[in-house]
Length: 311
Image (cartoon, rainbow, N blue to C red):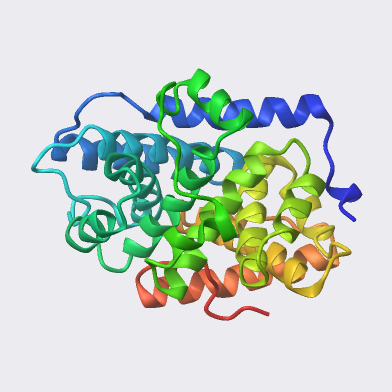
């Protein structure tokens, strides 16, 4: 099913560790004054933009920004807000993702409290990306080995309380959100499904066990994270992305890959100009990403983990 997209255990572990390390490089574990936040976000973005001839440095910049935004949400000051014109627009997507994840811990999964934060402290076009961040924490807080590993790594407190009841794929928690918000939460959950499984096959199999309306967004989240983790091989991944699984999973997977490339292009504009395609399917999917990137620029903001013109 996914053999052409497999990597050695060593490569997989090194790349996962590299992702965690990049996020940790952005985190400062203290309160961040508003001006410092906007300034540092710009520095991360400009550093990535200066190296945008390949995808990995752009991904590293995204991860560092995410870690910094997570700190911003954990160690809060009254002045802190993401509704700040000094924050570069290229950084708004990933800052909201990290902020949403941190706010979920801060609010202890209190849906009403989260909704208030997102409505008052998030830039309206990007608040849905903070909702997506909720899903990543939902996965991390599930009881089991991955939660223990995250505690050991310092990503969450070692004595962190359990997350919401998982019955019916967190039905009681999800019922407090709209259908679109639940899609985004499931996408964020899928990103961490990719991180918590050593192989893509196992991650996809886990997605297939979810309720039918959650399978595709979970697969898309898996693909998004898979693209980020394996960005040095992104051309090969795109070319082999017609995975032999049910249509909704394959569609979600390819959408997640294309969106991942588009997300990087938004963060470091010009990356796609340097892209050299080596296969027909890669060329087709990169053309889709180029079209989507143009739509983003015309619109003035990136859509929340969806394409305006999916194929």
